[in-house]
Length: 256
Length: 274
Ligand SMILES: Nc1ncnc2c1ncn2[C@@H]1O[C@H](COP(=O)(O)OP(=O)(O)O)[C@@H](O)[C@H]1O
Ligand SMILES: [Mg+2]
Image (tube, rainbow over all chains, first blue to last red; front, side, top):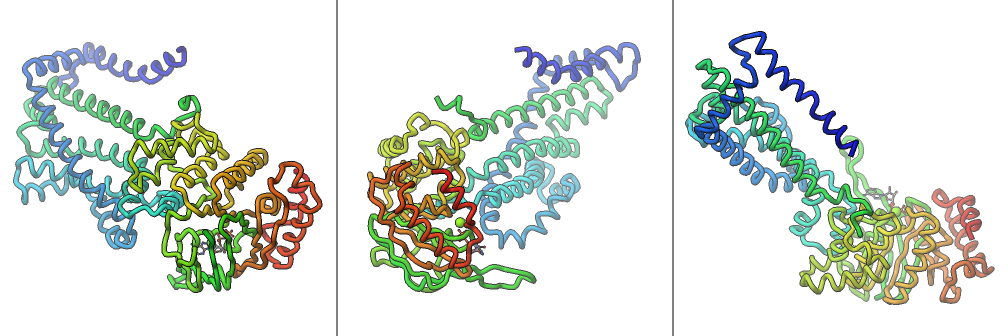
């Protein structure tokens, strides 16, 4: 119990200190761009009451969610195939590397040019940002599957599809989940950028608009929500990860 | 089921420097017959091609030349008439013990209820019922190997191929597993091909021992182990007959020249453990 309290203390003390400073310091040193946390929170409460914040959160989450889902659905099977057939992968690898290292937002104008300013171009740019990290993690995972497991399954006369679905993908799950974690944080990063560069809704749009109109507490409220969202997503993925890799951490205790 | 191997040759093809292909002859002119229901051990220095030979029998790699038949049928890929146990256990870590044992039944499309009944039977056979719902990571090496045995037995292969199955467990566990294997062999009447680098282990367990020599791998000689069964732990190993057979195997290995994997000290150490 003492350890638990100590751990909570260690993990939260710095954050609490920052929040406290944010509350107190602006009361003494007044600056237009540095409102106190109290002002920010009251702006946030107002925005929540009017439903404004919820609308923006939802439209942001919808875009990010759609982008993540589409990129995973595309990248996972392709990654499994390319990891399984390294000869094809050898040809494509330079292209992947080049595309992965391109700033995604640099390509946004291109997407707008081809797909217009609507939702499609925003989701597309998120898909583009998420696809390659997911693909490369999956390829890595598949390449790192212990060959002994594959031989063992093959010795039982498993079909090629069975081998991929029952052995290769579960064995690669660690890499796949880290890819997924990465992709989720990328999706939020790209999302906000895309929303700032042209959108009528979403958290990025909200932050940008209130910055432009000097409604600074509301701008900070948007940033705060963004941060909380990031933490929440990370926490959820952590839970998912523990669920899917429960076998890694088990000890004899759980066998009874 | 009997195995017949004649003039077997296997080349590994690999890419060396400057991406050049070159062949490495791992097995040459291998001839061997394994009788139905027999316990045959394969001993030889490391690198002489024991695993390669076993993988060939399992259908995991293809021969270059020669003849490998099971009951008169040439081997063409893996099949459920053969089960192979790898030295590294090769359990699926994300599956519980029960689900590991069910794996092959799942592939075969056996119904769920039937699967769990069969799996439970073989988990019982290896004495690990209490661990049915554990994950392999929570088990010791010896337990993992027993689960691997249960998994291989679950689909009822006629032939069990075992690649140095007990090399990675401690001495006491190994002796225990010897009794287990002999008990299971007696109960299930499988044909067993057992690879080991321990002469003692081979003599204690087998009906016959095929001694291999390396580069390229060949079966040098096959020796009958005419020790009475049941073999008795602690007694069989201290008989003069046991010592005589062990010496015979050892001499052949020496003659073969490929003693890199089997040293005199090791033999003495093995004997000291009696
Ligand atoms: N996949 C492979 N490619 C090329 N050479 C191999 C391969 N597997 C094994 N060899 C070589 O074949 C020989 C026999 O190996 P192996 O069958 O593993 O021996 P053992 O099991 O008796 O120790 C060794 O010299 C090894 O280096
Ligand atoms: Mg070997």
